[in-house]
Amino acid sequence: IFSAEPLKKKRKSDPGSAKRKSDKLKKKFDKELRRIDKRGNPLKPIDEFEEWRRMSKMQSTRKRGRSELSQEDFEERVVIMKTWGRFKTHQNGKDSKVLHKLLLSQEKALEELRNESEELYQKAIEVDENLCGLVLKGPYQTPPIPDYISPDGEYVDITRTDFDSPWTDPTKQQIITNAKQN
Image 1 (cartoon, one colour):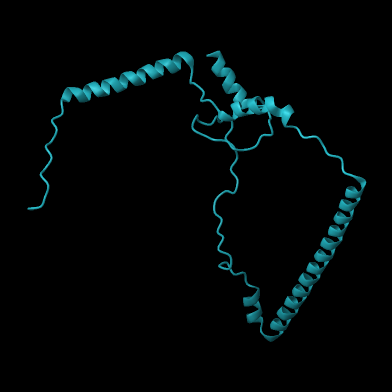
Image 2 (cartoon, rainbow, N blue to C red; image 1 turned 60 degrees about the vertical axis):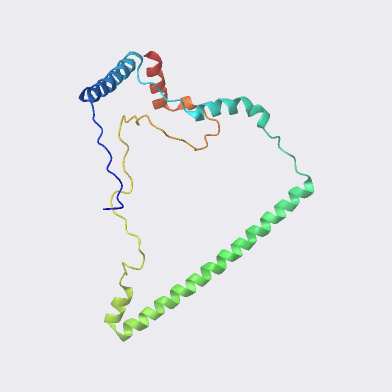
């Protein structure tokens, strides 16, 4: 108690100031609603559209010409591709032989186990649910909601569109034309 700080004085709040504050906030919301009714809901600018316009102007300067290969380089690449194809075919053949041998030895071991004891055989072929810790519940895919327009919000789309026009999406076209009409 001796080392405690002194208590802070309580502020005296004016009951009228709280009312004025709430009235001011209400006026602000009313004003915003009138503005939205008058002009329609404003669309947020999308940075990707601006980037698309800038890149479409530069598209002609950014194109690379195709370089022609000499006959020697072309033949060298053909030899490399053929060698690679032979190697992968040989590798796949070896892998399939090893897998086939493993399956045969597994079947042979299971048959010998069945000859020894049917109960042990049944335990051996039983599926172990705890072997893999993956548990899937619920729908794997949900159908889209028809006529759903996503809410306006902060969203950064980083997908590459290869300079396709943003006007190709019919929902965006509808939103933009509605905004222009209001």
